[in-house]
Length: 321
Image (cartoon, rainbow, N blue to C red; front, side):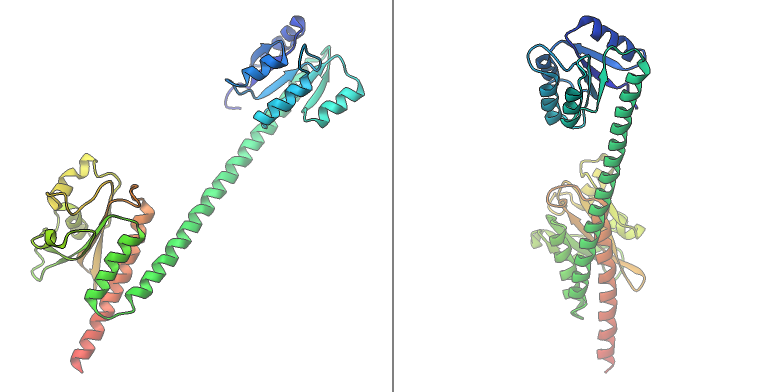
């Protein structure tokens, strides 16, 4: 084990408990001693023991009744009965009621006790490893289910984006659906002007449209501008992070565009060139965005890029006709 086993000895005989303590401590175990079942149960209120080694016959409550209460409180704790009252009836009854083993006093061969305790600890360690694997598989299944759900949403939005050849409508649907499905507070899509020197708000949601009328952001500045200049998505898990404070201030000096506690910004590519950026803020239902949310937004941006390119092709064909 990674730590010494914590063992509770329950025996009203000082000579017997001293002997058990001597044997167990020689193997490096941590040993506590109590003289009654009632005291043992009380100790379980403040401490959790790996193993309980108990006399069968105790003053007051019996060792078997104590074992029942302990197993109810801590099912993984194993109880070893050590008693001189070793009739076949007592032995069978103890084992049927959940004792790990029954050892007869006096213990002439110390290895008998060592072996039983080691078997208990091996069983518990195997159980911990098995539970760890179960937890890992549960988390993996949870992640797969979340990924599957995300892909279904992405496909639904993709169908929505490709249902029209109107570019303005595509960009509006992209911004609104992304903000809605991420359970975010605010979202907006910026596009480069004809000169490529400034980003302007094309679509927004959760933001007063009047506050975006004079908005201009140069590529490389702010959060969205950095996503445009680098061509790479950006995630800000915590808007109070000093690394990003200057960029947030550059983009939103009045505090009306970007909401705390978290921000996502992904570039929008058209025909292989960065045409703008989609920025969502406020976190997912008020909690920080994750890398999965960033991947979700990036996929939507890629689908939107294809939809915009297809709309452009259709527009050119119509114009030629």
